[in-house]
Image (cartoon, rainbow over all chains, first blue to last red; front, side):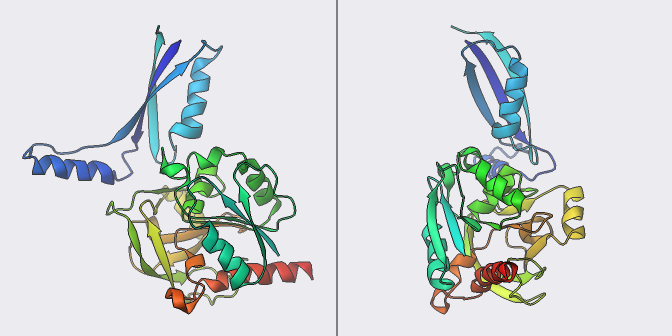
Amino acid sequence: MILVKVYVMLKDSVVDVQGEAIKDATHTMSYENVSEVRMGKYFEIKFDNNSNDLEKDVDEICDGLLANPNIESYRYEIVGDIQ
Amino acid sequence: MNFAVITFPGSNCDMDLYHAIKEGINQEVNLVSYKEKSLEGYDGILIPGGFSYGDYLRSGAIASHAPIIDEVIRLANQGKPVLGICNGFQILTEIGLLPGTLTNNRQNRFICEQVGLTVENNKTLFTSKYDFKEKITIPIAHGEGRYYCDSETLHGLNENNQIVFRYDSDVNGSVDRIAGITNKQKNVLGMMPHPERAIENILGSADGLNLFKSMLETQKSEVQ
């Protein structure tokens, strides 16, 4: 089994309104030193077998589903065999 | 004219659209499941508002991979009229039939109210019954209605007269106050406001009815 960890973030050019709301909440918690929060998404995808081109498969899943290339960017780590 | 209203798990404006066609313009209409693979025989495709798949991942993202979608794309490419309202607009951008993306409102809350719009292009099959620059009132109901695209895309939308409806005030942070756009060919329209909820005065406005009348009138003139 191969584990792939995918991280999706809004591009810097897109205002992250959820991140702003979370930042405001940290201030009400008295953490006035928090200057920015940006919120993303984290996915763990398990593949049964190592395909011939795992990176191509992951790229296609990310581009076609997990991230919207208009507003989001992604990166991933292939963790390798897990039991 | 025979309309298909495509229903996804979580669609909730499908019956409003059905009613707008059936009672508003007295035409044939059927609810068609997202599981179907054919839209043969339909000459208008309507994608309703709601929360398909609970807006999981991103609004419209999972619906954009439903079985019916390839057929929607096929008919859109044939030039058939395709209208996506609210979640339907979000789905059309996720499919790639319309440029840009709808994301969280600037004020990060759900907005449900009547809004003023200006008809920016009345030379489309969806807007021929409106006057150019006509002011209309149609309700919105969305949390993720802020239209976003890069400056190059926005330039193209303006150049090709693809911006069909603009908000009269900045209601959600959309670039250029965009409320509705078409594709380049002008046969696919996506809009966040709900014309199907504005077809009778008892609903607070009947300004949406002309959109459906426009579709019908265009189709009739093409048949003749």
